[in-house]
Image (cartoon, rainbow, N blue to C red):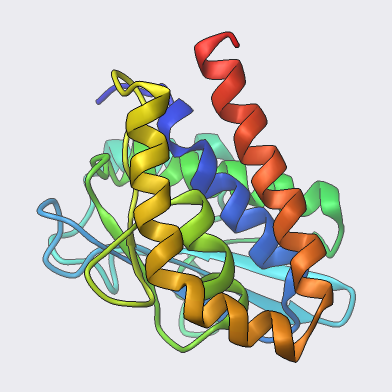
Amino acid sequence: MPTDHTAWQPLAEVFVLMIESNADDWVITTTSDTWDDGPYVQLGYEGDMILAEMTSNRFLRPIMHEDDETLLRDIGWNEPEGDKLPNWFIWLPNSPESARQIADMWIRGLREAYQLPDDMSISMESDNRTFNRICPRLLFSGRYPGFFKIFNYEGLTMAEVEEIDAEARARKLELDTELIEADPALLAELAVLEAARDQFLRDMWGD
């Protein structure tokens, strides 16, 4: 499995913003042909600390190979500790630096240890405003709201990416309008995200 995570960088940005923008625990699940019950990532907030987790064999079907568990250790994940901490985990201070570190560890874990393909899909287990607001801007929208698919930028022209992005924007326009009307500050956050994505694409094509 290749370990070039370029195509997954938009998902890393989603993870960072999710960590920084929420105060309640949340879970993002994955769907792919690789797993019957696939890996998920979840985050918990405990005072000024955050608890990040990745799925252990207790919840995976089929289970991981030992070599893949070794990869998780090498990435920096701590082994599960019984019923209290049944998943691979790490405690970190709640800070922007930690958000970036966790996002990178999640991406590496999903790609290298769980060996998820580029065509996997992700979804929130609950209706999370932050997730539903930012994912259509950074990931290809799936068949229904709240369910999104990563797409690989490699080999696509800027025009093709813009066409995909326009489709995602159209599908979520109504939701975005409702959220922005409820909280005008979201508009400024969205502009920052879109600028970051545009820069990411420019860097990829050398424009």
